[in-house]
Structure formats: C-alpha cells, structure tokens
Length: 315
Image (tube, rainbow, N blue to C red; front, top):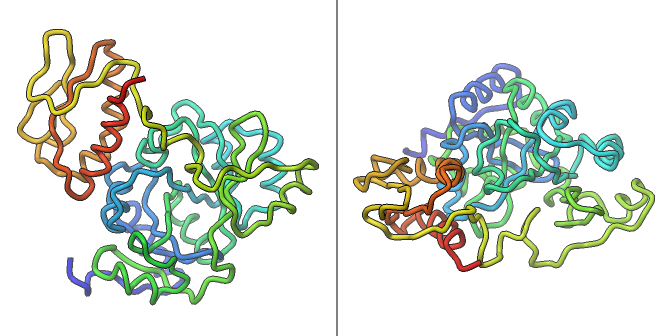
C-alpha cells in the first residue's frame, strides 16, 4: 500500500458514511475519541482485527477495548452487573472502559479477547466517534492508532506520521480533549479493580460505587493473567513444531503442513492469527492431544508462537 492509499476524511456525514463502509468491508479506519485516536476494525472479523496488529507492527495479542455507540450493545455482549450499570450511568459516554464476562454466542473475534472469557467495553465521548460507531452499527475494536512503542496519537497528523499508507482511512476532527487513555475497571471478579489508570480518577469511581476500589499491580495484564507461563491453554496437551500427527493426536496445520484444521493454507500470518484461538478451541473439543505445525517467527508469527508456547507449557 502506498502512502496515497490512506484516505483523509473529515467528520461530516458523507465522510463518516465512507469510513463506516470501509470498516464493514474489513478495513482499518483511525478515528478520534476524547482520549486518543483509535485504530478501528470490526470486532467480529478476525482478519480485520489481525490487520490492526500488523499495521501497528506489534506482534502481541493483548485484549483490545471494544467501542460501542449505546449501552444496550454492551448488555448484549456481556453479563451486565449492578456495578456496571452504575458506572455506565455516571461515566458513559466517557473515558472509562469496563471489563466484564462475555455472554455465550457473543460473536466477537477471539483475537479481540485474546481467547479470554472477558472483554473491555466503552462508549467514547466524541461526536465523530459516536457518529461513526452508529453508522457502522457494529462493535469496533480500537487500540491507539500508532505504531507500537510510539507516543499515543492525539491528532490525525500523529496518526499519519506513523500509519500513513498502512490503513484505509483516518477521520480528522481535530485534537483529542483528554489526551490519555481510558481508565480500565475490571468487573469480572468478586470486587471492582482498577486495571489501568486513565481519564476517570479512581476516587470518582469509588464515589460512584460507594466503596473503595483496589488498583491492580502496575505490571498486571489487561483483564486476565496473560503473562503466566501456562496460559491460552487447551485442556488437551499441545505438541509444537510437528510435521505430522501421532496416532492419538489431532493436527493444527499451517501452510503446506496439512492438518484437521489449517491456520492458513497459503501461509498468511494475519489469517493464521485470526484463526488461532478459534481453531484451538475446535481441536480441543475433539478431546485428543493437539499437534501444531511450525509457524515462522517473523511478524505476527512471533505472537502466534508466543501463544502456542504458553498453550504447550507444563501446567
């Protein structure tokens, strides 16, 4: 993709409609929120979500925040709670993300949730963001619209300086008002916990809920213990770098190495990333050990192999 391929869009109705069409087609669109510019993709489309990681140059499947236009959409995706209702009434739209347990048949890509049973949700308080989310009429996964390791973008110029030519479009509606990411509150456990400080202060959250709110350790991963050596693990044993299954095994193929399921017959790492968690779940349901074909350690392959090594680690 050449630099000229990234469309520069404004925030008027015609441009918002164009951006929504692009996201429905599985493309990436950067858009402003009150915190930072986000890099949005259809959260139900695994290939589109994989493209976010590829564009950012960060081969890491950390859970992503899903952006919505209405609280009703959130209630349809997760098991809602009284605390969630209180916080939503107080701070949505706004710079607060809530991590809640997923409902069955939620429809989100496993790459959004990193294969976990929770998801982070928020409704942004920005007119252009809300207009785009309503026009697209879908849950939108949107990390910050910048290459990995770079300063978070608070203007369209920041987005283009790092991602020009790597995404379909950017919606430009000026600088972001808050300029720091949303506060993330975990509501999946027995008590609320601040997983990441951000645009809503801890004291305001505690006042809303009527009790103190603990803060997770600074190095705690978003929403779940993804840094544990054994994680993303099926019930079945996993054997890596296999060229063929043993008699007792089912096989997860890649490229020319065939299997019961193949992450990507064409060797496309973005396609493989999009399929990874879903295919592990499907093979695990067969009740037999899982053999996995070699995956290159380049690009998104580094993240795929990281998750596979965690899945295969001793438990």
